[in-house]
Image (cartoon, rainbow, N blue to C red; front, side, top):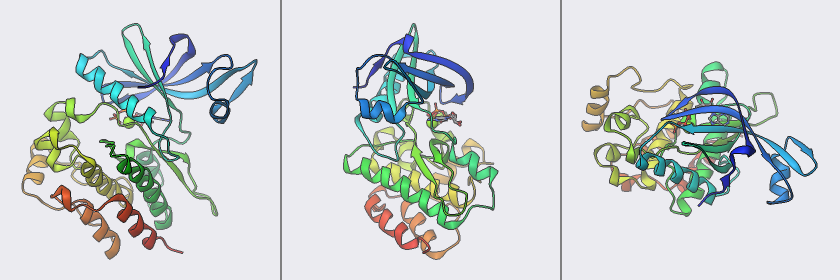
Length: 289
Ligand code: ATP
Ligand code: MG
C-alpha cells in the first residue's frame, strides 16, 4: 500500500550514488492540481505556482531485478508509507517508469550521518551524539509499538535534516527507508552487513523480528561513539562470520553506562535485548545537562 507516482511527475537530476541494488538520483517531484493533503504538500514545497508544487526528492532506482527483489523493494516503500513520525524519512510513493521501479523519498538536506561523523571526527560532543541516538530510538520505539521491523538500521541510513553543530542548536535526524530486506538478499550480502545485522538473522532470515533492530541500534550507537569508525570493517567475510559464531563481543564505547546500554543491545540472545522504551529512558539519563 503506497501512493503510485506518475512518471511525468518526477524529474531526474544528478546521480548521487549507489545503494543495495539501487542507483540514487537527486530529483524533483511536481504535483499538479488541488489533489492531496494541502498541509502536507505545503510543508514539503519548495516552490508554488498555479497549484503546482515542486518538492526536492531523491529517486532510488532499483536495478533490473527478479520478482522477489522487486516485491521486497515495494514492501520497503509500503512500510514507510504506513507510518508517520518526525524521525522517519517521508516516502512519497513509488513510480513505475517502463521496466524501472523508483522509490521517491523526501530529500533530507544534509545527507547521511556516517559521512558527517567522518568529516567532523573528534569535534562532535557527547550531548550531540546522545540527542541523535534518542531521536533514532524514538523512531524505533514507534515502530516497535506497531510491531513493525525496519531491518536496516545503520549510520548510513540516518539522514541529517539539521546538522546542529553551531552553539545553541541541536541536530535533527530522520531514519531512511530500509531498502530491500536482507531476507531476499544473498548470504554474502547478509555477511557483508555484519556487525549491523543481528547474529540470529545471518543463520536464518526467518528470525527477523523487532529484536533484530535492537542489535542494529547497538551497532549504530558504536558507529556514532567511534565517529563512524566501524568495528570489524577490516575483517574478511569468513572472519566476520566466525566472530558471530564464537559469540565474540564488539568493542565497548567509553563511559560505563553507555557501554552497558550497548552491550544489552548487542546480546546474542534476542529476547534479552531491552525494549526501545527502556533504551530511551536510559539514554535520557545519560544526556548531559
Ligand atoms: P540500502 O538499502 O543499503 O540503504 P540505499 O538504496 O538506501 O541502500 P544508500 O547507500 O542508503 O542507498 O544511499 C546512498 C546515498 O544516497 C547516501 O549515501 C546519501 O548520500 C544519499 N541519500 C539516500 N537517501 C537520501 C535522502 N533521503 N536524502 C538525501 N540523500 C539521500
Ligand atoms: Mg539507504
